[in-house]
Structures are given as structure tokens and as C-alpha cells.
Length: 592
Image (cartoon, rainbow, N blue to C red; front, top):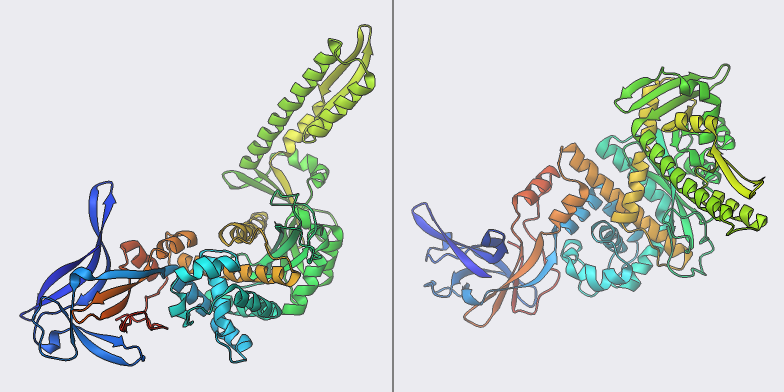
């Protein structure tokens, strides 16, 4: 790194501006990259053109110093210092941009004031509201365990300056204690977020999307009775897990969530969720949308009894009663690959929507073809062994045949297969079932929706159902970007608090997503966070000829993309950071 001087003639005078520059290797050869601007170190004797920098002494008292290069002729002034430019160095490089963005999102959602009001009731070294901000911002920017936050992530960020936290005050014990304080506020947090989403984005919560996922735990989790083995969406049946039920609106804004035991069946959660939502947010004529895994007649009756409405998927088995309609060619094409048909049941209060998707049909056809090839190959192999006399015991033949059927449940019902006696001995015979094959081909790509809504067309109902992708996207964000899984906490309340912090992190993420969307930005939330994470806070040390060191806290120069992202988010980096500590130098200047 080196200092670069830029001479500018202004008002008949020459001004010297300095910047800190590094040489970087690129595919086009070495290039020089400006890290940050230091401002003017003016050699003029006229004070009105001299750059002043506020500095703090060891007692925290501020003074004004005028900086000159060491080789310049400085006026006889006790407040003038001459800097040894060849000994300027950079220390304490820390992540700034993504943490600053996370904190701004935290403030926009009103969470800073919310937690100050609910947590900061006692005099403590670090207000609990700021510790909560550290947990949520970490979950957004670089999720990790509480120990990782203390040892690696937090020291590498400028959050101590942004949140005004004294050095050495963030540790895993304080983070754990904060988790314990967050959990009792879960209902109030959900209500706060719902209100702010409505104020910021005019978000409405009359239509609710509901789905479930699972998240597994590392370890035995003996102190958590909710941890059970069940159907694992994470493909970790070896681990105990929790079931997470999430409710969002059609735009993906989180409304509420609940945790269930790991072995809880999806279909058994709906009535609990209905009661919980009414208790938290009051009774209302809500529209519920969920997929076929949550549907049961009892659940739909419960929604109707509460005056609610629903739009749900149905089990594939119900397609059979609409076989004749499925074979007709009178579907309405609403997209190039999507066709729908509205079916009114005589005397019924419900409407059924028969849907068929070309892409889904090709996928299911390919799956059927692949498994059919496999089962036919297995059957041919077994038939050969029987015919060649390698397998003579009839019971073993039937056992092997049953094993083949169990290994290919996707297509086993498409074949008739049996071991029959012939003159030459037992033989395995099989053939396809033509009617079953025709029905399977007819239903491929088709699915059935069921609703008690009356005002919408078949196309509009299909579009509403497709909004379930928003809750699926929320699950992907929670599990991947926000690292909800795996769970390392062993105590039940800590696990629940961990999920609450992930919920807060998702609230920050979805807020960022919609701020970018509102400004028609071409950046995704992940791209924006990644680019802003490359903005650093640095301390520039200016040695003087008197043996002192002046510390300038600066933010690295923004490139075009970073400036564009901040402009789209209507954010401007602060002009000044107030250091929360005096560094190991005699004088420490703030960001000027």
C-alpha cells in the first residue's frame, strides 16, 4: 500500500488531497485500487485551506489538529502536526457494510425501539436490546453459533462502533442469557413485525400460506422432550428433530410460526395453528392455503366452523373420481404449459380445480419410465435364474418376487406378476396392466385443488395456490442462508429461542428483498449482502515527526455497484463513527 497525492487547483490556490492505494493483480495486469480517502493534507500556510481533523486524547478530550506532510513547511502553530507519509499504515480492518445494512433493517422494522422497551429495564453493562441486535444481524450476515459469534464473527465486524458496545463485552454467556430473554416476547415480536410490514409495504394478512418442515439436532438432546425421530425433510432419519410450522402471507412476509414434536404428523397440526392464530391475532375471515399433506376432512370442517375459507391441494387418490373429466380435452390454457378446469360438484359448497402442467407431466413420465425399466430388468433377472434352475425353492422365488415389488413401489401396481407351474417347472411370468398404464398416463402432470371460495376464476385460484412457493422459499432461506439447521442447543428453551432468532433473521431478509424489489433492483438479497460485506471499516495510523500516532477511522471507498445498491436501498453511510474506545495510540481521530 502507498499514499497517492492528487493536486487540485481551486480558487487560484493549490490543494493536495491524499488517498490510500493498494496494487492488485488482475487478468489485465497490475492495477491500483483506492482503499479510502484521507482528505486534504495541505502544504499552504493559510489556515482557511488547511484540513482539520478532530482527535481525542487519552482522557477522551477532543481537540483540532491541522495535518501537514512531514516535508512541508508548517506554520508555527502548536495545533499543527507533521505526518511521516512513508510510515502510514492500516490496522483493524473490519466488516462494515453488511452489518450496517442489517442494523438499518433492524431499525426500519422498529425492533431497536421494541427491544429497548421490553428488555432494557435494568442497568447493565450492555443493554440486552443491543445483544439481541447482534444475534439477529449475525443470523442475516454470517450465521454461526454463539461461540463462533464471540470468537470469530463479532470481532471481525464494526458492530461495536455501530451499537456503541465497549470492547470485551460480547461473549457466549451474554448471548445465551439474551436468548433466554427473547423467548417470552415471541407473540409481541410477531405482532410488531406484522404492524411494521403493513406500514412499510402495505402488506396484508387476509390470505395465509401454511406449510411445515423439519430441522434436526446434533447430539442426543436428552434435555429436550420435543426432539423425536420422524419424517425428515432434511434426509437425516438418523437424527432427532423438531417440526417447524410457518405461516406467511402471499408476498412471503412472516406472520407466525410454531414448533411441534419431531414425530408430529402434519395433518394433526392445523387445529392447533388455527387456535393459536386466533389467540394471538383475533378472529377473522382468513383464507388458508396449504398443500395436500396437511389436508383432512376434519381440518377443513374446523376452518369452516371458524368462518374461514381455504384453497388446498388434495391427495392424488381423489383424482380417480374425476377420471372422465381428466380425459376430456376442454381445459383452459392459462399459460403455455398450464391448463385448468373448474369442476362444480352438484349440491356441494365446494369447487374443485383440475390442473395439468406440461413440465410436471414430462417429469412424472420420466420417473415412471425409469422405474419401469428397473423393475422389468429385475423381473427378467429373476425369471432367468428360475428358468436356469439356479433357484428351485418356490418359497424363495416368492420371497424374491415380493422383494422386487417392495423395492419398486412407484410402478409395482402397473404389472401382474406371479410364479406359475409349467411342464418344464416353475416359471416367473409378468405383463403390464393396460388399463392401469392408461390411467397412469392420463393422470401424469395432473393435480386437484379444492376450495370453498366462490369469487375467483379457475385461473385465479390456481395462481393463488402457486403462491405456496413463498413459504417454500422461506424454508429454503431459513435452512440455507440463515443456517437454521442443524440445532446444537440441547435445552428446549434454547432451541426455541434459536428458532426465534432465525425468524428475526428471516424478517430482516424479507425486508431487504422487498426494498430491493420496490426499487426495481437487479440484485438479490444474497448478492446485495455479499457486495456490501466488502465495505470495511479501517483504522489509518499517521505517525508524526514528534513520535505520536494519529488514528483515522475510515470506511473503504465504495465501488459503482456498492454505491448503486445503497442508492436503491435509500441508505447513506454515516459521515462519522464515534469510537467507543481509545486505541493504543496517544491520539485517536474519529471518522471525519
